Length: 201
Image (cartoon, rainbow, N blue to C red; front, side, top):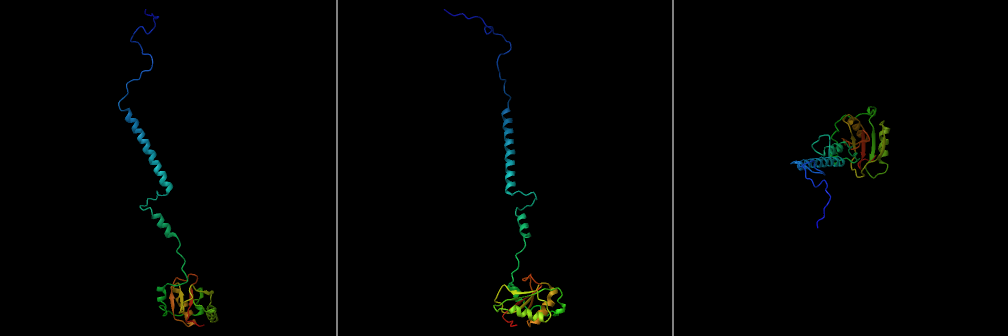
């Protein structure tokens, strides 16, 4: 025996409005558009990350220089050079006496030229004796001291500028030596006397 149910709205089939959620047909190509946007966003994020890392590492320069070492080389050249030691180079020593032909100045012509006397030997008090000889003749000696070496065999009078050659010649003449040479090895004075073993005072 079949069971009869009461009649309801589903017993009548009609072409009326649908009930419930119904998805329409998807457009062709929507998947490719989403993929393109995702790829674009990924590329932008990667580019920003690379730029930030380059800036943090200092490998990116806004100066437009072709070589990354340009700033390094410019900073390196801006550093002051090491101060010259009191020991003259071998090439400088080889030129001793090359300026012996310059006219010798007198103590009255010394002007503002500074003179120092340095002992290049192991003989104690040699610089003081040479300084006394110069000051006794009217020369002005700024200071005395020891040279950077104690093995000098000959006395040399060094001067820095060409205008100081005459004073250097006068100092050498007063000390009875002939070796006079232009050199930048002694930057603390205009004229530097380095006494060697040949000077007895």
